[in-house]
Amino acid sequence: MNGTGKFDYEIYLNTDKLLACQKNFDEFCNRDEMQFQIVHQIEELWLKLINYTLLDIDDFIADCNTHRVVTLFRRVNIALQLMVDQLLLLETMSPKEYQQIRLQLGNGSGQESPGFRTVTKMPQYLWDSFVKHYLQADNLTVEKIYNSEYTHSDAYVVAESLLEFDELFQKFRYHHIQLIYRSIGMDAKSLKGRSVELLRKGAKTRFFPELWDIRYQMTDSWGSENGVVRESIGQG
Ligand code: HEM
View 1 (cartoon, rainbow, N blue to C red):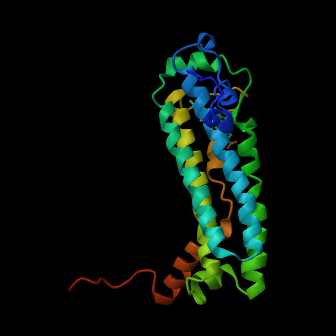
View 2 (view 1 turned 90 degrees about the vertical axis):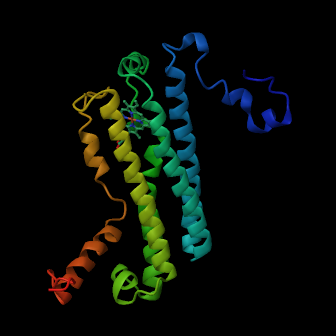
View 3 (view 1 turned 120 degrees about the vertical axis):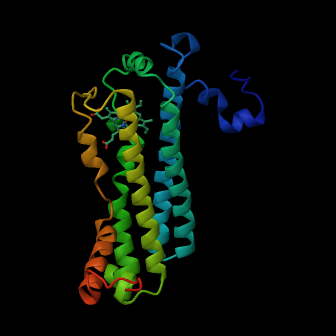
């Protein structure tokens, strides 16, 4: 099943090592464990690609190269969506089989994921670059690009890419919590002894709060200028 490792395809992709990254078949505690390992490993690879691409995006933001920024954010955001979708695979695992797998994990926790820990550090750098090169350099603010001077400008388009990234990351966290509810239950304690409810707090964290706040600020200001409650548009 693992091939010979001698064809160019196998050499280039390092399939020898890649396919040896899972336990041997006779070491799996049940028939679901390989899926559990593979899904986590693939998620780490997507996170590696995401982090690598975010570094490139940061450089292109510094150059105000909007086309590159948007294209690369599209790549990041597709990878994030794949991360969300892949969680579904783990829902095919029964609660009992997960309990058996859980015994194999030692004290392991997703909090130790190198990819996840890196990705949560990236947004501050991206935001600082965006503010410096797309806003301050042109005397703009978030309010101006979304509302008072809205032109669907480059700054606006980059801001929306940042927001989409933020939204998809929250989506991952939300679906991950749903997966936990489904597999170990709502009030379960994690292997680190903490209630999974603490993850809910993380799921509410926004990387770019200003880009979310502008929405309600516009609703408030448009409401105060045009009336919070409107006349009916119906006849009579
Ligand atoms: C049945 C499947 C899963 C279960 C039951 C599960 C369970 C948990 C629990 C209980 C925590 C809380 C952390 C703690 O205090 O120890 C956690 C955190 C985490 N898990 Fe999972 N997880 C599953 C699948 C996954 C997958 C596929 C990923 C893919 C990357 C993942 C990534 C993470 C991350 C990144 C955290 C830290 C999140 C944060 O701090 O906001 N988990 N997981």
